[in-house]
Each structure stands twice: as C-alpha cells, then as structure tokens.
Length: 284
Image (cartoon, rainbow, N blue to C red; front, side, top):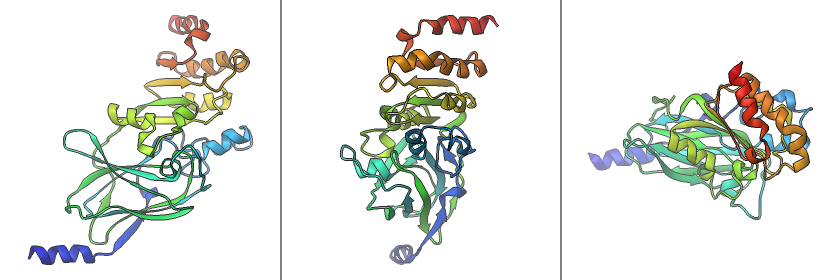
C-alpha cells in the first residue's frame, strides 16, 4: 500500500501558480510600475538613470506561501539577464527557498540556479506530503518579468498561515552595493535578509550599487514607511561634497515625518548636527 502511494505521488504532474497571488515582502511602496521593482513609477523620469535601473532589481524581496507538496519547482524570467564577474549567477539572478521549522527558525532548503533569461528548476523533491511554510528570496542584482511556483497537482498551495517575518513596522535600509547584496553567493545571504530571519522582522532593502548618493527622492520614499528603525549606510558611495550638500536635507526629510523613530547611520561622525536635530525634534 505504501509503495503504491509513493508511485502515485511520483506520477503527479506539477501545477504552476503565479507568485503574484502570494504576499511579497521587502517593498517600501506599492506604487511601482511592476510588482518586483523598488521605487515608485512616478520617479522613472526624475531619478538618475543608474539609480532607476538598479531600483528594478528585486534585492531584499521575498515571496511567502505554504504548501503540502512533495516538490517545489519554479519558473522565472529575469528582467535583464545580468552577469557579473565577481558574483555568482545564483546571487545575481537566482532564487533561494527557506522553510519555517518548529524550533522557530528559518532553514535554508535550496537555491534555484539560473541558466539564462528564462529558467525552470525543481528546487526540492521527495518530501513527505505535509504542510510547510516557505519564504522564497528573489534575485539581488536582476529583476523579474514573471515568477511561478510549481507544486504537485493534487497538493495545495495557500497564503501563509503565520505572519512571519513580522511585517508591522519593518526595518528600512538605505545604502550601497554592500547593502544591496554585492558578492553574496545566493539571495538569502544578503545581510538584510540574514537580519530579517534573525529578528523575524520584515526588512526593506534600498541598496543601490555605487549609487547611494543621497538622492532626495529616495529620502521621500523612505519617509513614507512606518518603520521601527531607519538604517542609512551611504558613506562608501557619497563624496564629502555630496554629503555636505545633501545629507542634512536627506535626514530632515525622514525626521520630519518620524521625529521619534531611531535613525542609525554611518555618517554620525561627519554630522554633529544630527544630535541637535534629534533634540530639537523632541522639544517640539
């Protein structure tokens, strides 16, 4: 009987479901032209071209779902089909699957390795048919045109049952390639994704490789998020002149809407004005 049951499971076909049916974590705004972009479409003709192109990378985003399938497969089309000499293709344009365990931790399952612009991969198979919670991390240095999740045709795939990572008051990060995930071997190893799993809190990755130049329109996007903390790490990119010109205004845009929310940045030593600005905000 058990053998027959196993044969039946193996004979099942895969059914694919559009990932747009499931929650997407890691976005600062929903007003984007496409689902897997990071800046609002209103900035398309306002932002610098390199910044805008990088905003179409899906760094830090993740899909949440649950399923009792014995297999998880994926189909996806990358936006640019980027390739980088110093970074694995899996990190650039692949996918990473994690599973929630009973010990209260996210466990790495496997990576979906890309072969080009259009890809298909079975990420895991031969599991017991029991319901599990999953988190699927998206490419760090490419975007997505489409993404579908494949499961056994007789199994179920549903909305997540548990609200993890917690989405209320996320942590917002702004910074450079270090933040975007440059050099990470796979998407789940970008440090914002590691922090998200360890804190069990949604993190928003606004890292723009080589382009954390304190663009004020990005500060306005950041200021619209009801965050628990803002982390600003622009110093590796911004010049002294750019910091002198824009840093105070960038900071004030955020602080004006969030007078009491902690702001952690890499430029505190460069900005003695910050403490006085914080005190002024508290006095108000």
